[in-house]
Image 1 (cartoon, helix red, strand yellow):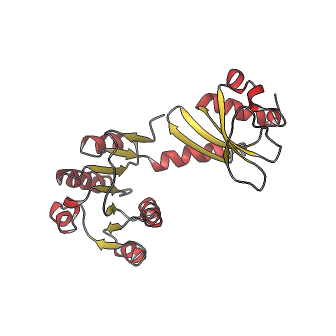
Image 2 (cartoon, one colour):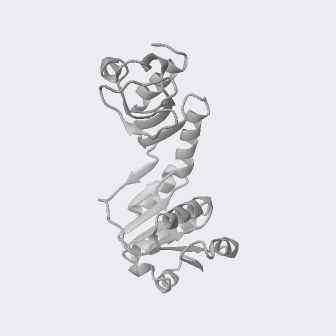
Image 3 (tube, one colour):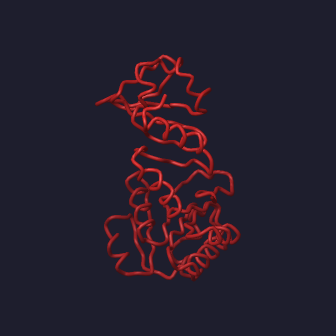
Length: 234
C-alpha cells in the first residue's frame, strides 16, 4: 500500500492568505474548513458554477485557468506562502498547475493526487506535500464498515489510531495491570466516559463498559486487537 500522505520538505509555518485551486468536493471541504479555522482563503476554479457556489463563503473567489502562469501572477499566487492544488480528474491540469505554482517560487505547495503515479509526478514537478484523499477514504471506510471501529486514522503506512467501544476484556481492570502492550502491542492513549469528554489515560485508569477508547499501534496489531475484542475474547 502506498503512503496516503507524503511530506517531502520540512514543515513551513503558514502566514497570510491560503490559495486553494480546484473547488470540487475535496477543495471545497478543505477551503471551507480553513475559513472555519480563521484563515483567509482565495478559492480558484475554472468552473463558474463552483466559483458561484463559494461566493460569500470564502474570503475571495476567482474563475481562472490556473495552468497559465500569467493568470496565477495576476491572482497574486507569486506572493503566496501556501497553495493547495486540489484539481480532481484532470491530471494534466493538476500537473501543469503545480508546475506553474512551483515556477513562481511558492514555498509551501500541497497537491491532491488521484493515483500513486500521479503523486510521484506531482512531487517531481514541485509539490512539497502530496495527499491521496480517495485512497485514504477507501482504507478508512474498509475498516469502519465492519462495525468494529468507530473511527480510523492512518498516521502513516503502518501506524494507526482507532476509536473503539471499550473492550470487555479491559473493563474494570486498571490499565497498568492489563498487560496490553505486552500481549497486544497496542496502547490506549485516551478514553471517553459515558456522557463525558475524552481524557488521557494512565496506569490507574479503569474503563467502564460504556467508555470509548482510542487505541494506537501498528496497523496489524491494532487490527488483530480489534478483531479479538469484537468477539469478547480476552
